[in-house]
Amino acid sequence: MLIISLTLFSSCSGNANTEETKNTTTNTTANSTNNLLGYEQISGEQAKKLMDTETNYIIIDARTEEEFKEGHIEGAILIPEYEIAERAEKELPDKDQLILVYCRSGRRSKIAAQALADLGYTNVKEFGGIIDWQYEVVK
Image (cartoon, rainbow, N blue to C red; front, side, top):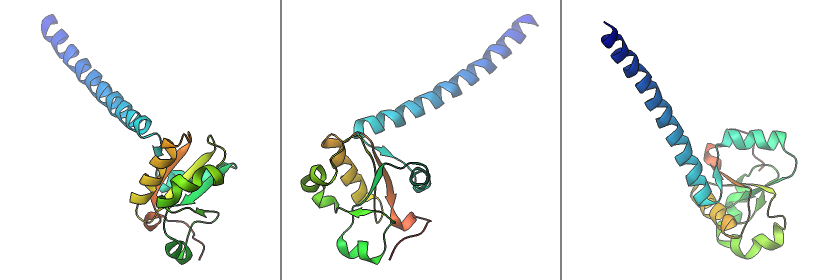
């Protein structure tokens, strides 16, 4: 009986450790990916929370001027992803400032966020596209 009890107990605790290890590995992988990218991917909800609680941040709209005019997030500045490398250092002098980046669907914002990270910006958060933005926009 004692052997059976010990076997069952060790099996249960082994599963718990395996699950804990799996969760830790998943979190570590996500953090490592963000570290390798040089920027952090967040949700629109997380970006909105930052906008509501932080004061020293910049929102970059990485779309075209025409798209920007159709509607954009209040306070966003337009820097199309293909102009980031040439305009960033002049328009974004503080490389440690919180920079939130979005586009239409999330593809160009990832390119822009990576370009900023490659230029040495340290607090870049990419939150996808305005098509998923559930909050107000300025038209």
